[in-house]
Amino acid sequence: MIPGAAEYNIEIAFDEREVERALSVGPEDVSPAPKLTFAKNVFVPLTTACRYTCTYCTYFDPPGEASLLSREEVREILETGVEAGCTEALFTFGDDPDDRYTEIHDQLAAWGHDSIHTYLRELCELALDRGILPHSNPGDQTRKQMELVADLNPSMGVMLETTTEVQAHGGPRAKSPGQRLATLRTAGELGVPFTTGILVGIGEDWQDRAESLLAIRELHERYGHIQEVIIQPVSNNERWQEGSPDLDTMRRTVAMARATLPDEVSVQVPPNLAPVRELLDCGVDDLGGVSPITDDHINPDYAWPALRELEEIAAQAGVPLEERLPVHDRYVEEDWLSERVMREIESFSLISATRV
Ligand code: SF4
Image (cartoon, rainbow, N blue to C red):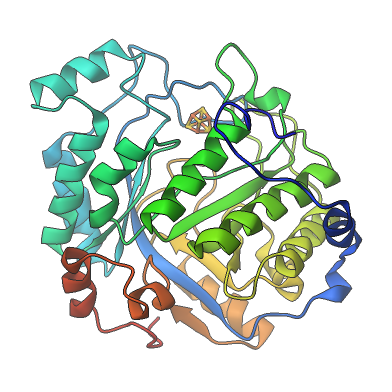
């Protein structure tokens, strides 16, 4: 039983034969993708407040030290992103940041907001007005929270990380796999194209990895909304010194993802964190949001490779590199998005066009 499943009414059962099938996959069982895609993004680290304290995470700051970007600061970041040709404004958060951080709550109130989500809505409108597409990743969300911003986000995301309980999520406020899956389900119910993923090396085992991928697949089969699944290795930083998964583990996990997920769901690895050149033959087809101008605020020790390096990676694999929007083309073509978002998308000329 997935921890938290009963509390969040998650009905996902794993067929042992499916788990065994996933566990049997190796790199030799999958084919390299015929092309690689990426999106150009700008990071907007809206707040570093988070109700959780995951032991591998340097993103969160304790109460009293956490930041909240002002509308003016966000506007400047967005405009820098637009000037650099970015199409995605990646709004990153801790989880329920206004929950236990009194000063964040007070600041939001001073700016006329009773929650981080009403503030996010204002900033998503600002992004669209400036000609860049919001992709918000506000941790777990209730239906009410997601509904507040869904029509302004062509896609949203949250990492599932794992369906099991791990010590790395420990402490008095551990995040719940059941709640994460409920967030993924809510996105499906609301018709929000969604990015999720698993975090490799935080204490999960092979069975957990297989079950995590199968849980994502199950939700995608119900709603059709999962656009990409990130296979992310945990990385050393000032809070996490337990190392990263080795190359064989990453190769097998990526291959397992490719073989387990439907073809239309991209398998993504972050090129600043994973040895992407050694993973391409395992079925990677997407490099995610790559920022030409801002740091990876979630993993500040790991710089993005330059776009030229991505071209070299693709050339080494003998496949084309294509820029994409933060929402995959099929959701645009199949009319998943609001009129407001579609107006902006129509102003971009790169849907399905090669442009690096
Ligand atoms: S990984 Fe996410 S949920 Fe965990 S502490 Fe960091 S920001 Fe919060």
